[in-house]
Length: 355
Image (cartoon, rainbow, N blue to C red; front, side):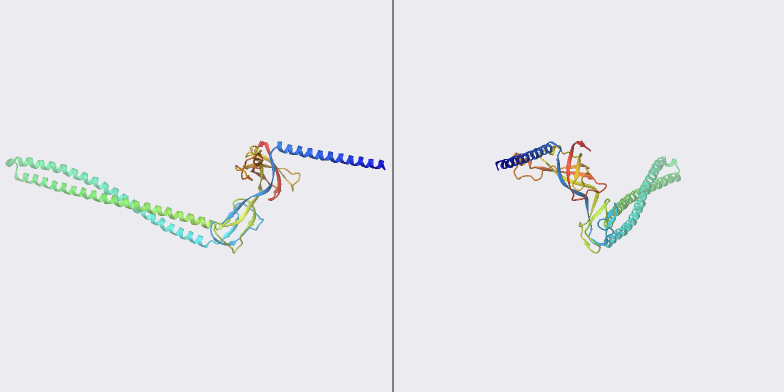
């Protein structure tokens, strides 16, 4: 009986020793793994997110067609939704008609301004001619006046007819000088009036041109509104969601669809405060997905947040500082579309490699 008890005790001791050794090995492996994780490059877990864009309507209108179904692939420029465009098209037609009328009016105003400018030039030229004629007649009148005085001073030695002729010539030239001066004055007044008319015509032509420019801006705005009746895909991708169907009314600014590019995905994970200095934009990263065992995806760090998250209210102790984490966003190439939005992954930064 004593021998049996002793054997049982030995078995218990052996089991205890084996279990203790196993626990010690597990604890040592755990400590070693934690030490390697602390000493190794920063890593963390995250969820794959699709690189999507929300499409919104700039105008309020009713949906008349939805050529693309949810889940379909589209190319850049494909029509996602068509909106009723009666009012924008009417405004565009009105603006174009007003532009045609304003253009014709501006052309006429420009022609009138050119004619007025030429009349002003002709009037200024007539001033010169009148001034030259007045100067020539003035010189002739001076000569005739001196000749008449000379003849008069000769007295009876000069024939009476000669004296009369000299006085008549002098008087006639003086009259011509007066007429030439009056004509010069009239030419100056005409030139002044023509200049004022030319300036007024030029101002009117400029106003007409400005009016045309204003209406052209209205036409461009109307065309933009017409273009907004067709909501286009800004890039290639997959139509993930379509929020409106034909017949429904879309309000201005409402999101109508979501387009996702499955070839470009991102993942955001969090780096502790102690490791944030090792994270840099452009750094390479390795990504492993739980659902794709054996595959490793290469990524690039696109953003390292400047502000920490999960911040305690009062940071006073070392443990509080250790709780600070910074979001890091990594972009991945996903040409075969193996990575899908929502997949959990593990991200490890390659601290010695940069793109």
